[in-house]
Length: 191
Image (tube, rainbow, N blue to C red; front, top):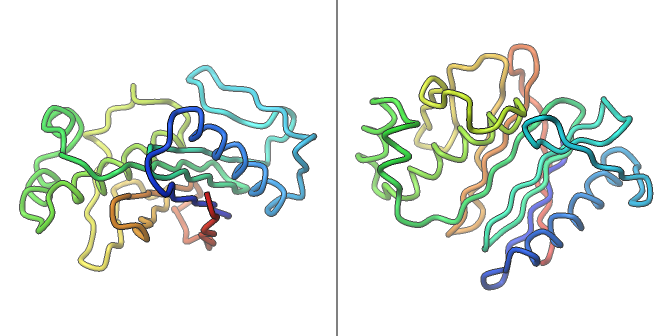
């Protein structure tokens, strides 16, 4: 797996985020699969998840926010989510977190950051599935250890948090039998 991440020096507009994501996708596909930009033809599944036309063994996912862009490329289904840390959303937590997750978020030294650790993990999972937020997120449960290692009740999925930037949380998910460990290189790219 290859993960390409770019942090914006300030706050990027929507078009700037999308341009940066497309650049990272081209670099990631070239690096991981030798696919040149002229060979990239993107289509979407019925839930809107992008995929490469005619290349069923090539998987990727894109996430962006005003502060960062992340692209994940692999030979198995993947999902990535990136969020700028801000005030946590109690309504989202009520709908999507189970009681034990809510207790851990509220008990954390930085509850807002902890909220986004759990939220990005959940979102990365549904993005890997390719089914969108219609999935019952409360049933996907996580526990993040003191050293930032996520554990989940989804044995077919592997997860990783990338917290290299102080105001951004990135979660990675890959779907493989048993969620077996996968090596992922995180490449930081200049914006």
